[in-house]
Length: 336
Image (cartoon, rainbow, N blue to C red):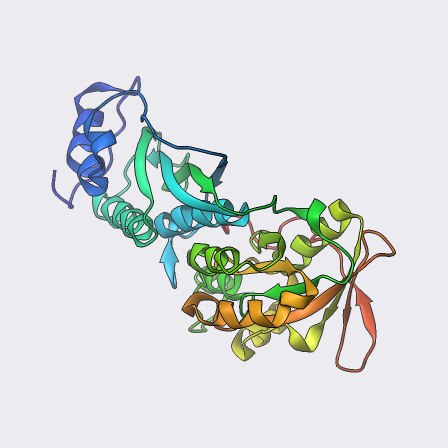
């Protein structure tokens, strides 16, 4: 099957066309023993508590500066597992392909998925492929599920957040959302900004292995930093005070957000996270995070208070604090 062809509709979900697509394009790319068995599912050997997550990816365009839907799907799933304090191990992949999708594009996306998974030692062990009519899938949708082994010594989540905890961020924010916006011709942006799409398991596992008192972790995807900290504050029943000057934002990203009339704190990221850690561990946690390229820009950006519950504020350069709320609606659809 050459790269010059396109994905063709196989009515009924089976037949020789689908079998060839799987046998000649999909399965050889991932090359895993579980896939080679050709069975209805994968048999996994996992001991102890596990973390399990699922997500769907519908980004437009399929290829954007700094990544594509394939690397986004794998990294996004890996990151969700890492936020649970787990070491990512296995993934499933469901492909919804639109009739007429170029095979060259499919091969590129599959290779991105393979490479992103291999970089973190994750195996793609089972999946499914469906083809739908033209115009029904923006070219391609991807659904994933991931399984990881929990390595955190204590549960990580909003319920563990306490007053006086430090709020850390892993790096500059807003690049993924702006990169996708710039890739869409109708927005008229011509800026060389690449997505921050990346796996986050290395710095997070490093914090856990070093014995840092990690209370809560959250990747900053839809709704950005603002929505993440508001969700945590409301769930934990605490207040959170951020320092605007401490939040890393690249100048070109800030300029693009100003041009578009959007707040960088609400812009989606795909390679950034916040960590709530014990106050006595904050400085050491930042040092550990900065040892990894993906979190080299780590910084302390705020503190947790006890009241009023659910309130998030951000103090600006003039010392005036403004209330931060979750993003209402979507700034841009099909962004992750």
